[in-house]
Amino acid sequence: MLCNAAPASAVQLVHEVQQGETLAAIAAACKVSVRELLTWNRLASNVVEPGTRLLVYLQ
Image (cartoon, rainbow, N blue to C red; front, side, top):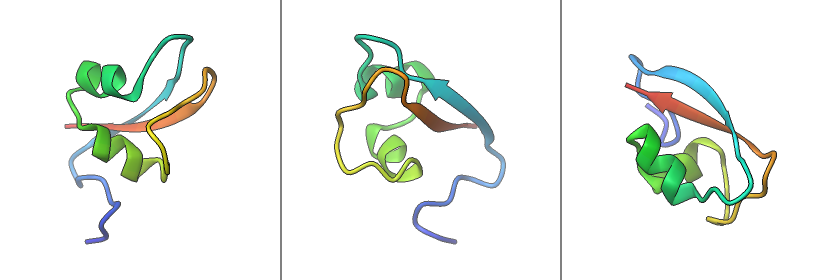
């Protein structure tokens, strides 16, 4: 299994970042970790701009 692979049983969603949202808030709402969001989306920073589309894997 690759380090950035999503769990096999996960459902993939795309979340478009809205003005004022943070990775921490998105992670909490989706019940995933900030580290998972960073890994799945190959982000180098916790800063995301409005309009950015993020992959989110839900169990």
